[in-house]
Length: 78
Image (tube, rainbow, N blue to C red):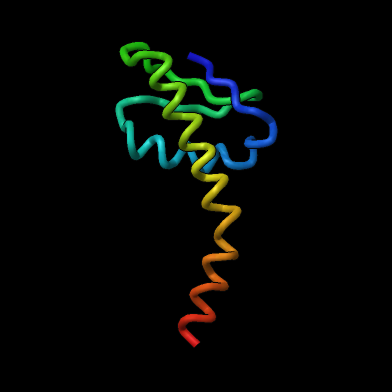
């Protein structure tokens, strides 16, 4: 199954793949040119697609808010 990832989220795929491998150790996830390829034939494709996209978007949010969280902690812990 191929899951297309928008180019605006491509920079977050590698970190999301690590999270997905931990969540689904029995499924092989591989980065492809336009997204993520998986061998999960036993799962409902719509559910897996939703889970993969959620993991990529979650990684985007984590990465983009990290400087804000670090600054907040630095100010609180001073």
